[in-house]
Length: 317
Ligand SMILES: NC(=O)c1ccc[n+]([C@@H]2O[C@H](COP(=O)([O-])OP(=O)(O)OC[C@H]3O[C@@H](n4cnc5c(N)ncnc54)[C@H](OP(=O)(O)O)[C@@H]3O)[C@@H](O)[C@H]2O)c1
Image (cartoon, rainbow, N blue to C red; front, side, top):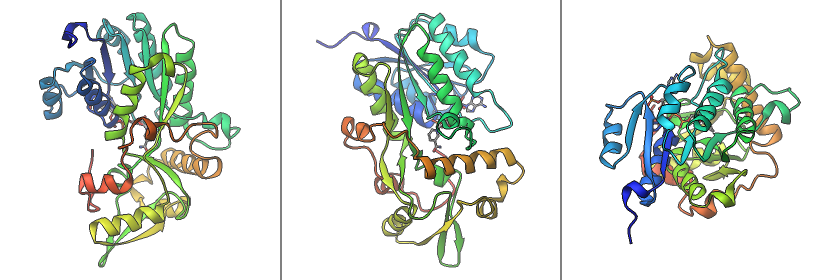
């Protein structure tokens, strides 16, 4: 017998119109086993209307510090929450505080279970030699959540395929698209499509929370080198394309001069990629097969290119 809607557990998703949040909301709703409440500033956007048509209740709160009471109210009645922090560029440093406020609001609202989208503690792993606060702050949030009186589990997303269209767009030189990539040409790195891979992982965790409680689950689409990414792009689109290194700081700045005014942000990007190359993106004991085993349709880079029809232009998702 079908479960009546009001009897389904309610999961509240922050950043519900972002890449991870939308994916999570869509998978939870499509399963038919959950009600979903989503938090966004853009409650009148087309994407919000589409979610509302599927029965998602939308609440307007910025994903920012200073809204703990609003989050407490929005989380009330939720069995679970999917929490994430947005990209926060230095010199701003409030990522940990935002994560703490979201988690405290969940506890105060009586939420039983939280899934948080975290990353590794680069500060600890590298003995403070690599600067990647958007990793380390997430690890600190994770550690804080573990101290709270609610059940928790953690996903760690790989590098997003969407970074290339969104932030590190190729440039045309004659008949060739030049891909400046922030990783060495033959370095095999974990990548993922956050728009399609987040949801199945979050759904699997909420469906079997006792099995996943306390665990860190990496979400990976493909382990792939920049050389392979560029060759695959050429094969799929029929366009000539070459790799160009943006791994060293001077190379990065030459290809992405827009980053020049924010030295700290450049430090952070370089710190992150050096960490990934020298230590591995994920801690050595992580199960990189997990997301592929719970969702055999997890997109490869090739599938991402085919699904999105991306031809090398700047595009936001
Ligand atoms: N790029 C990568 O390779 C990668 C890999 C692993 C993890 N991550 C992490 O993923 C996170 C981003 O997730 P995502 O890509 O799913 O996010 P996203 O698509 O950028 O969406 C995040 C949502 O947060 C809200 N938001 C963003 N900035 C805000 C601000 N200043 N004030 C208020 N609300 C704000 C926006 O919601 P509304 O506009 O709808 O209100 C936005 O839709 C970051 O923490 C990043 O470190 C990234």
